[in-house]
Image 1: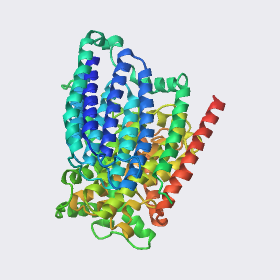
Image 2 (image 1 turned 30 degrees about the horizontal axis):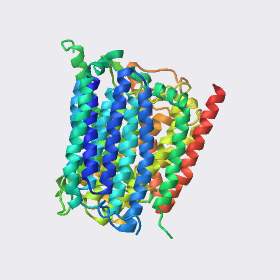
Image 3 (image 1 turned 135 degrees about the vertical axis):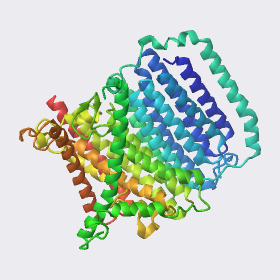
Image 4 (image 1 turned 180 degrees about the horizontal axis):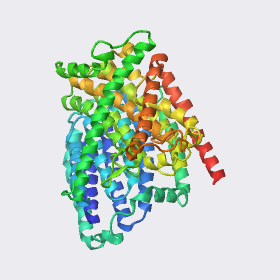
Length: 100
Length: 168
Length: 352
């Protein structure tokens, strides 16, 4: 048996790598990808806790996170496409005007 | 068995995440995330969440990440350049992330005695009726959240269509 | 095998089973190619390959040798790791999904099921998952070859596959509702009671689901009339323009392996899998061996029927235009699949 703490620490590592990537990366799409990494790390803790307590509720929560992530990806990528159409760049440092 | 799976696929997930951080080209980062997701799917399976493992592969790596790669290819995104902003981000980002990791693992390790009791129910929960359990819960007690998420998806589809449409 | 322990017998038989299934699948892929060329030839009023061996039967072997011996060209501007990974991914995913397919009735030798490699609880979801990973092969090949035709082909293919995956998944929900399980073996058993009458296609009234599945599957495997990713009149050869020798052969084989998987799945889900169409009308004849082989014969015959249909469709129908393809998937197949789910669950609720 693997202690739940191991899964939690793995999730913490993935989450902090996600934070680091979120701060370091300059490309909007990569920043978005690191958000997905953080969501995945949190999902792992939910599944580990669901296994620990033998409750299916944690898995239900992951299911909802996945659905919301799918919706978020659709809208987020649409926003990225429209940003690229108006500014021809994906670099966040150059997307610093509220209005063109 | 579970420990072996955890070590192999945990290491794979970690390697994928570090590669995500290291690569400069968005498509390589996206593929590293796919590796992370696939190894997480195996971990879910080993934790008795069969349905989530399948959903992780089908929804996350099969649909969401394909969409990401599609957009990267469509916009022909190239490698990112170093800027002043990115140097500042390096200075803040890596220590910040390390601090958060230290905080989280400190909490987990200090609460280890409570978390060690993972064998409350013994072996893997009976995987044969995992899907039955999940769907019974989903369609009875969680019916309202389920329906609300379906409306959320509908709104998201409409939003995506409106946002990505070319202006006439 | 008396001096081996149980676990050794299990391992040995499992490895043997995997090897045999892999070899048979690869041979089936090779001969599906020949079948396609022969049938296309006949439909277009010509002979098809007829020179090598009797009736051209050795043609696949010669083709294989030719592709294997050709120079493996590596264009300069490609993304090397992804360029090599893409065909491996495509062929690997196409071959792996055969692992959960039950070919015959449960036949145990030393506790090992002879006609299925892995009996997984969520077999149907495993196949869907592997199919969705297979998209990466095509996507990455187009992007990594650094060629605009390849990129266009793979963009088309990605959009097409993720659109039709929805209709494909939804068309199977009716079957799952009837069988109340995602285990392929259980789904087959639920249709084997009264021969043809209890198949999902006839007795289960899932013919709407079947037609949605069939069309979505043609689109998923990038076959005519949905073969836009490799439309040779528009895109040279689509995503595999830059590939040569064995790498091209791997894409070619993955296409046919996918056809076989899709035909197996159609057989399992809608046409009773390995069960006989006559049910118990024919009295059992022959020994135990014949009774074990007969279901496999039915299974192979049904799969062959679907492969024939594939080729027939290719020879008959012209290619879709791109906007028609998207409109057909999103505006016709998807609502129809949803209506099918509602009707099926309504009928099941009334009966139960």
